[in-house]
Image (cartoon, rainbow, N blue to C red; front, top):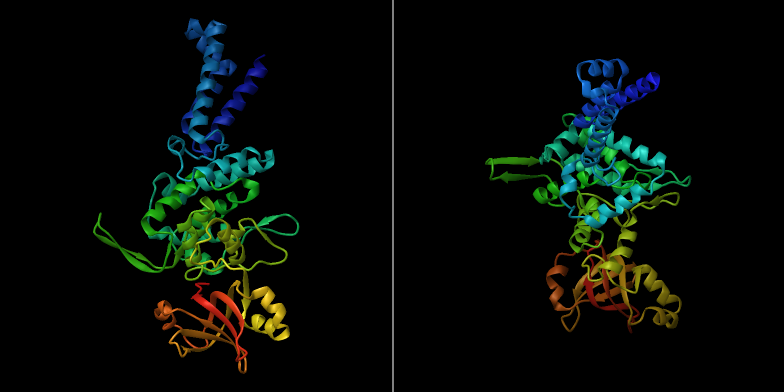
Length: 417
C-alpha cells in the first residue's frame, strides 16, 4: 500500500511542477501539497501530531477536497485544458465580439484528434512562454512597435495552404520578417507570430480568443491597415511613429467574413500596402477568399453584390478577347455578349468626347482596332484622371459592333480592380 501511495504522491508532485511551466501557480501548489501529505512518511508524521488525521474518512475526504479544488481552478483558469479556445479566465468572463468564429474554433478543437489536440496545447504553451505574450495578452500593450508583428501573422494566416501530400504549410514574405527582425526582442516576437499562425491551421483548430482580442485592440487604435505615419496621443501628449506599412485586414475577414467594411478594407489593403497571392496548381488555400483576388471576388459576389470593388457582371474579358470574338463571328458574339453586363480590361489608347459631348475611353486591341467605352458626363472627374497607356478595367453594357467596326460598350463605369 505504501508503494502505491508513494507512486501517487510522486505523480501528483510532478504534475504540480509541470503546472508551473504553464504558469498555473495556485493549482500547481495545491497538487504538490496534496502529493506531500499523501507521501507515507509525511502522512505518518501528521498522524502523530494530529489525532483527526488517523480517521480515514477525514483523511481521504481531505485528499478528495484538495483534488477537486485544484481541478476546478485549472478549469476556470485555463479554459478546460484549452478545449474552449481560452488561455485565461478574462476571456471566459466576457463574450468575444467575434462570437461565431470563437464558437467555430471551439467546435473544431473538440473534434481534433488526440495527437492534434496535444500539438495545439504545446503550441499554446510555446506562445505563453514568450515575452510578447506577456506584453500583448497579459499587459494588453498597444504600441506601434508590434504592428510589424501583427502584419506578419496576418500575412502568414492568409498564406496557409495544403500541398499535394495533404500537409498544411504557410509562408511569410521576407520583407515582413526583416521588419520584425530589426526590432528589439525579435526572436521572441517571431516565435509568438509563427505559433499564432500555426494555431490558425485546420489541424490545430483556429485562432484563440486571446489573440483575437489583441488584434481588436490594435484595430481600434490604428485601424485595419495603413502606411507609415505619425499619431498624436492626447493621453500622454506624445507623437507615435509608425515606420512601416501594416495590415490586419485578412485576420478580420477571417473572423467576420461577411462584414462589408472588412471586405472593402481587404481589397484596399491588397492594392496598397499588401498584395494578393497567386494560386498555384499544387496548392489549396485554407482561407481562399482572403488569399486570392479570384476567390475574393467569388465570395463578395455572393455576400456583398453592391460592393464598389467587385463588379457584378455577366462576363469578364480583355479588350482583345472581346474584339476577336466579334471579328470571328459577329452573330455568335452578339448572342453571347450583346446587352449583357461585361467588365473589359485593356490599355487606354484614346480619351475623348464624341459629337454629343459624351466622354469615351478606347481600349487598344491592334492598329485601328479598339473597344470603345462610353460614359455619362457624371464620370468626367474620374475620366480626367486617366492617362493613355494605363491599364484599366471598365464595366458596362456591350452593344456589339458599330458601323465603323469598333466594339462598343455603353453606360460605363471605371472599375477599381
